[in-house]
Image 1 (cartoon, rainbow, N blue to C red):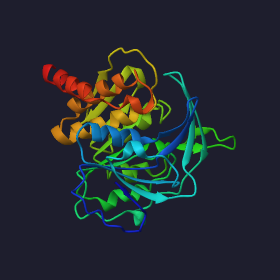
Image 2: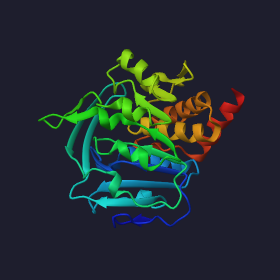
Image 3: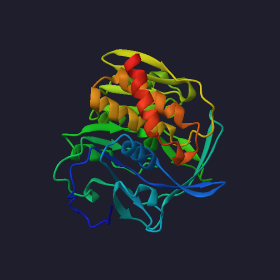
Image 4: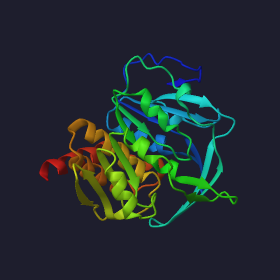
Amino acid sequence: MKTENHNKSIITQKPLDYLVIGHLTADLTEEGTQLGGTVAFSGLTGQALGLRTGIITSCAGDLDTEVLKYIQLFEITSKQTTTFKNISDGVHRDQYLYYIADPITKDLLPGFPQPPAILHLGPVANEVDPAILDAFPDSLKCLTPQGWFRRRNQDNRVELQPWENWEKFLSKADAVVISIDDVQKDEEIISKMAGTTPVFVVTENYRGARVYWNNDARFINAPKVKYLDDTGAGDIFAAAFFYRYYMTRDPWEAGRFAVLLASWSVTRSRLESIPNSDEIKKAKQELMAH
């Protein structure tokens, strides 16, 4: 379902299990322009996990969103779609950002008769107002802050930058997932962030992820797989983690579940990497055997 941006539109369908907010992107690849963005990968993962999923985004009206047809899509029409080019070898990624769609602010949100069970703010280009957290006091409030750690230079290359006022917003979140690269492997800032929010996760690419909870930290090793493409793997991880944490309230189990699904995802390319029903079933079986 596509909902146009009549400001303050009321979402009238059943309550959402999972609402993810951020820019859909047009990603320039050797195979042509392809749909991307945290909201695409996380949203489709939520759908695959059986969640009633919604996306709030800002993009140009000509963006092909057919693959999201079973997701409740609320589009804020923008003159441009956020446009990236990624060059990755599975370890290092160079990223270019050519256009940025309009920002998503609290006053542009549609109305929800009932809040989503899980709220996920997934900025990719500093486009999501973190104050949106205040609009959903009764949801499980989840963040993947990578887009707040980014800026583009005069050559359109994406550079890392410190996220200002992170303490204010992390303290309002229930669960946060970052990549170790978001903070340039700075263990001091990781330690500070982990102490600010109840559940904090640091993904470490092909190695796995560490989960901080209750003044404890555990590392979860990733299985060895045949790498093809890691685009979206962090977003798949995040959606899987937030889902499993919501269901079980066990961050260790959520971490194991998310590491498995994200690891298997890199054996396929782009949106084909979304977990399938066999993988989801297998991951749950491995948790039971753990």
